[in-house]
Length: 256
Length: 235
Image (tube, rainbow over all chains, first blue to last red; front, side):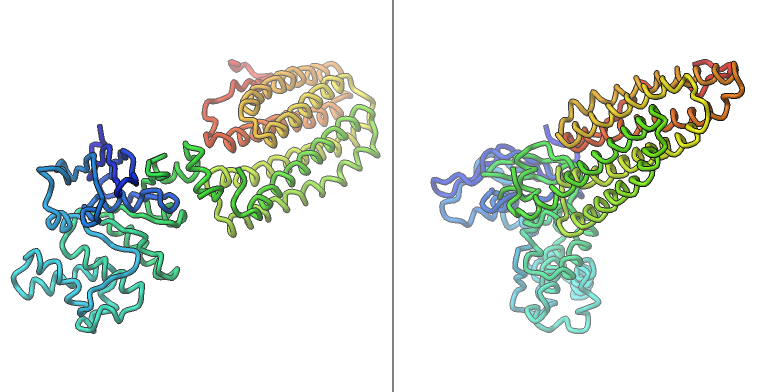
């Protein structure tokens, strides 16, 4: 089973935090070069699920993951699982609050490539920093102050810097956990436009509390409730005629 | 299940209330137009023509309310379908009332001429159309998808009666050319009533979509053969 062009596949994925089960045997296919939106009320398991996709739950005490996640045929978990450090070069993450390192704009973007030894020449690193900032739609705004601190940028610029930092290591997948919740509508629109451009090259999974954002940016939407996936389908279908009453109740604002 | 934001429910309820009012008005307009034809009552016909503006007002209300809900609430799923179908149903009802008013207008001419026999079949066609309009509005407002779907087929009855009436009027005119003026008006009124059946069918389909999210795709058995009458074309 699984779609022929699935970039990442989760099967019977469960997560326990201590005695509490946060995710119940979730199956999901993430299609390549698409944006998949995960929606659902707080505590439904969508962020827990997202964090499983680059093994971020590993660092949480008492967190236990069972089931499997496959990235291009390679299992993430288990004895033959991908090394988390290498995995995170392939699966980037952008968080709710922009979190640039307290370093220069340049060093923020160069951090990953240096860590993974992606480039040795200084010129090549310069070029990679530039391309990454260009792809993140930030280059023209920061090209004259690359050596200023990244933390001095506006919130929207910081978030695009974090996206530039994530794509500098040429990941295959980018995970975004409510990337616009701290941004104003214009900065949000810029990020959404960026997401649309980035999916030509990358596969994106985004957690959002904004129904309208899920509708605007994604091609596939998965609705989580109480640790399970209730419905997954083409975004247009989910927002015009959802199959489940529960999905309908949530997206129309009748519960949640 | 109600919305968490109660005022949203109130805004949506206004759409159904507006359509119920419009539907009720259109039904009474059509009923009055048929009565005016049957009783050769020019005063009643004039009243129908005057009252058409009320239905237009109803459509304006729905148009404004629809735009407001779309802009302020960004509805999705069944809410979105309710808003979009309301806009379209209001358009269909407006057309139905317009066709009824046109029938009333033509009755003013008919009343100045001697009565013609096909009027009886015309009245029958009008009553069928009126019954269909009533039922589709009930199905739409009652969110009854099954009933809406079954009513689509009812339009066939109207088409059959219309085709038969068309032949009857032709025969009548050929037999007595002095009836041509009356019969021509009768023909137009018949076409109006047949069109009302089509608008009612559209409302039924919108009602089905509103509830299920599925468009009715399979074609109806459409047999209005009047377009071929008088020519040597295969029916």
